Length: 67
Image (cartoon, rainbow, N blue to C red; front, side, top):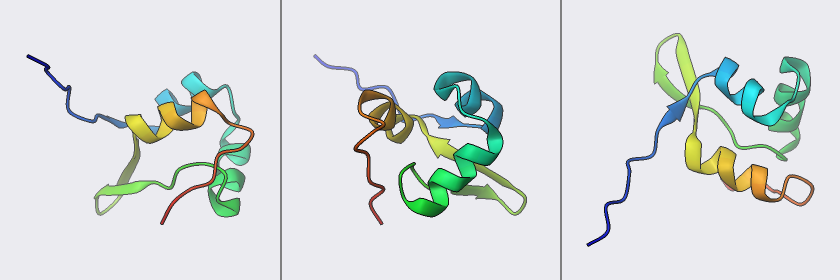
């Protein structure tokens, strides 16, 4: 029996800690399509899917964001 954990939403500071990127570099990569896009949690709140960040961490050099 497999228990798939739900995909967590990571906030900015957690993503920065896991990736080692600066805030400016992270947003530059999002704009360029070389880092996963944020998802809207609430009106003034956004985050990243943990699975998308993990995909990027596996192969950051050749990652391309999907629409």
